[in-house]
Image 1 (tube, rainbow, N blue to C red):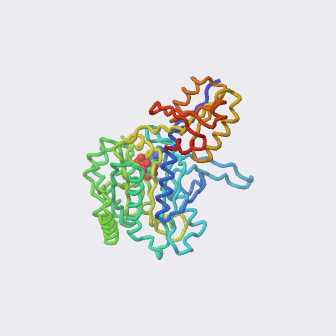
Image 2 (image 1 turned 45 degrees about the vertical axis):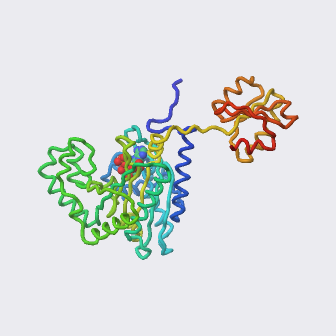
Image 3 (image 1 turned 30 degrees about the vertical axis):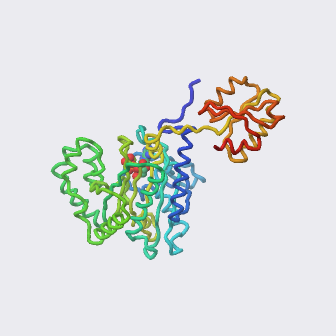
Length: 426
Ligand code: ATP
Ligand code: MG
């Protein structure tokens, strides 16, 4: 029989690496809570139409990356429903916002999520078919202040704080404004005209985009196209007065909070729903897949999927890429138990379980050996998994004085059982 393996582009996360994942998630929850965000969990699959209408038909995600299938019809008269594994989570959050009428409260909704996303991409380092995103959205009726540039600046400041607290140093925040829907339409016309004389020398994707959605040309990653793209007009020159003022206010607040950023005129992002502020945090340690996270404002998204006017701004971080970055920055975290308990002989196994239970209940991380092992084997196992070994023989049990060896120093110590906890915590 052939050996079954995890599907291409998916992978198992194993300890000790999963400890890093947990640390990232715990840090995100702790930081987001200080900004008064609450958690939302939406389904992993949704109606395909949700992504077609929000992310946009012409995007890479919808045009070629989605896992879509026809669900079985419930009755013969019914049409089979087209379902899709979520490729991103903003669409689901905004759908939930509309479905549960969260805007009725009149307050801003500040929601974060952590979970798997699915895209059929070519797997490589930092790019998988199942990957995890940590994201957040601030959305609400305009009367709640959802359009304020302060919301944009606050989100960006929160992200800078999160990365700093996580210990990710050396990130770059790239910032742009893609303006209002009208600004973008104007810019698309400008671009379309500018592309006419040069598009013949560009890749086939760009030739198609030049007709369907010229803005997407700026997203092109083909090296040969880059010199041509560098000569195209920039969107900053197509912004109207209110978009310009909004962007200036975002930058002024970031300057005041001393959050560093660089402007990138080509940052239009891979999803169609963005308006005004768009951003990416990148990190040099990641190589080709250098985007840690991306996001932006989406003032028209709710209306595009049939909801009320509900401007918002959000981001999604690639959790896999946060892990890769941390692994490159830190030496591999070796997660050792506080102690390995080695019973001397099978008869002492129950007593060893009792001792392990005491210590574990006191909050210590304990590896429990087996009295069937020879002492040499116990020492070998302990050396690989724990910082110390505690020997539990008949004498130790009777006298209540345990022998503890600390591997780092090679020191052997006699410790009364009542003081063992304190000793092992040192
Ligand atoms: P990229 O340009 O790298 O394809 P994107 O613009 O498609 O990114 P978004 O849709 O904005 O990415 O998703 C936000 C973040 O999610 C990205 O910055 C990245 O960190 C992460 N991400 C996106 N796709 C993948 C993937 N296939 N595997 C792992 N992480 C991903
Ligand atoms: Mg992508």
